[in-house]
Image (cartoon, rainbow, N blue to C red):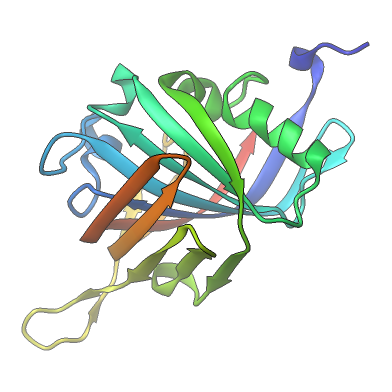
Length: 206
């Protein structure tokens, strides 16, 4: 019987990251949140366009995490509630649980997984509308994140901003804007208005 560490996994797709940091997210630049209270409270949506873990196909899966860290992510003590679309199978959930908690290794989850305790899993219909920085990620009955571009304060025109992180372990190219999110699941609640929001493509594996 194969051990957990022998399970190879990979996934590509789109990420929808809403948090309570000010624009740009201090975590990405210096490792510490630039939120008003120094915490990190995030709604992170994931749409896996192509993926596999062992013999389990993960393609098409939509899921999300509500995560709260009292201080910087690397200082730990976080709590996470995961949300999966009802179309997700038990086998897919089992593999995702091992990946996202870091048990199977591979970036970014081998670093992120140990920083939080999973307090619950809920199923909710997940829909994604819009594209790029103008995307909306909704989990029915849980909440949503609504993204938008920055606006020029003088002309009102769209002001596009991207961040490139050549050594980024979650994403390397993020399309940034201002977002608002509110969500609650398994006792974890996150919310912020006109705060950091980043859309990105990911390519993760072990």
